[in-house]
Length: 211
Image (cartoon, rainbow, N blue to C red; front, side, top):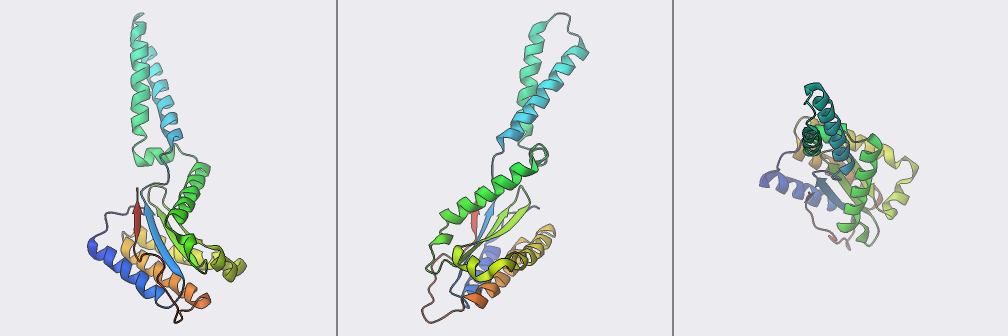
């Protein structure tokens, strides 16, 4: 799942999609994109170990006649190469466990949920659309008020929206997918929190992009 830099027109379309969705509800929608949810230092450590082992193997295969100094040089070089290979996204993910990815993505989403004020709406009816690019993860997180309104079948509603979003992302249609998801999320909010005369725009209508 690759999301290139969104153009100013695409960002404007997303902003308009939020505005249109929120016109019909007192709820708030906050879409967020992060490049990656964590640095994943464990992946770099594992690749460093692999690089060091490859270096040791090479040392014995090349048979440096008693030149033990070459052992140290090759060991350090292999470890450094392994560490920097961790900056290659597919390798980083290959050497990261599924549990680590799930945990770090969930934590980053919750951190973003708080820092972007999704919990600060009057009726506690904020909803976050979270996209983590490196991990190919998308999720929807809702505040307590909306969660209680939706009940036990809430996840079914969100999974349909996320499945459609993922299909758009796979086709390279990020802005279209995000706009479509926002529209559907707005429909869910409208069902439980329809707009009224006191409706205020409590959070900015924009896509939040984080490193």
